[in-house]
Length: 165
Image 1: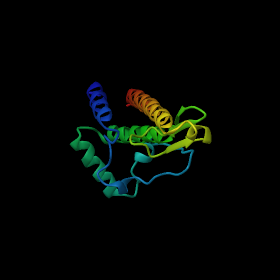
Image 2: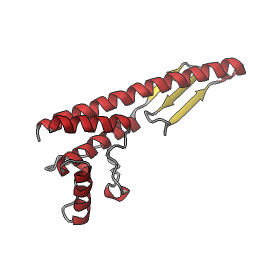
Image 3: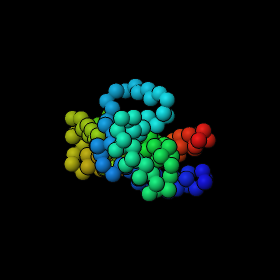
Image 4: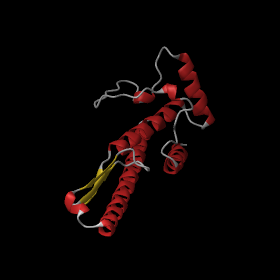
């Protein structure tokens, strides 16, 4: 049963980073603190509030539809949220001192900074265009590797947590 769950979570997660996205976005509120301690439940932000029976029932309904227990579903949601956070916070840089690109791990990027210095402008249109395209491609490649690493970390986290269930 656990291997079936892990393989189904892996298949869903690799296909989409929103594999465990809740039906309604009102379930989870974004936390803006850099440090977050979630005691007792282990589900973190995925844990329903004790006094919100509607939210708990909705999560149980979704988990049942996916063939999971509520704890397994919460684990999946928590793992997805951790991976999304890691991808959002990822910063890759490419280029040189004349033309540089910095981007996040998302595709398309939510964070994209392109820097062209005066020396880069002095290269001329064709050379500048060539350097910029190369820097964008390299940054995109690095970003893809970062997303893949985040997915691997997510799967390791799920496997570790499943051992305790």
